[in-house]
Length: 328
Image (cartoon, rainbow, N blue to C red; front, side, top):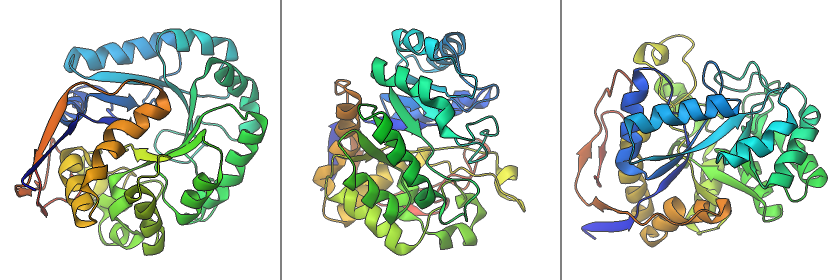
């Protein structure tokens, strides 16, 4: 094939950051995606009707053609009475960060059971629970696996609550999601479809949380995605950090995948003989889960080489210096 035209996708897990840098990141996402679920772990975090509207408007002022789908960060002090108010202004999900699990999560939740009133309110409001599913105190390769029993407990207490295990990274996570009811699903990133822990060891720019794991974990994620399983859909978790914060002894967690997402996904799906399933993965399955209509706009990806730049907006992009056989 020389080109493929698909429904313009949704990025169902993005970090647009704040301040002047957000201008570049928002425009980069809007080039490839019509909508995006924006993560709330900013400083200060997005936690209320006021902060949601402020952050949403700041994005729309930069890219009015892009629809930010808003989330709020669940804190120990979150008032369940605020959930209907957040739902009313269009908030699509609440994000649960275990305390200390990832960037800007120090104020997160240490014990999930304190969220029970909030989770009940979310279940009643039909609001999705988005989870960074890792147990911070566990060994880094086991954090996702060790967190899964918590999701099972939540589902047992709140059986109608829709739950997303974000950026699934392990065979255990994949098999768990497959075994659970229809309201338990997972997002999948490009970097977890491609990288293993060896790629992180060899290049600090690839450091992210959850950390990519072994080849068998990556293969399990690929099998779920390439099979077209409706429980696994796209969310990039593109999370840019300045170059100096990645090329250092203690690199920050987060990879900037936005510049390469659709071209690399097209290449990967083509190489695995399932290019016909790319549109569902990036444009349909997530919309179905969130019960939002498919986008009307289309986008075309071309079979033409692109060389990934070594630096974009002062950030090292994922796959820097490599050649991808598709481009926008």
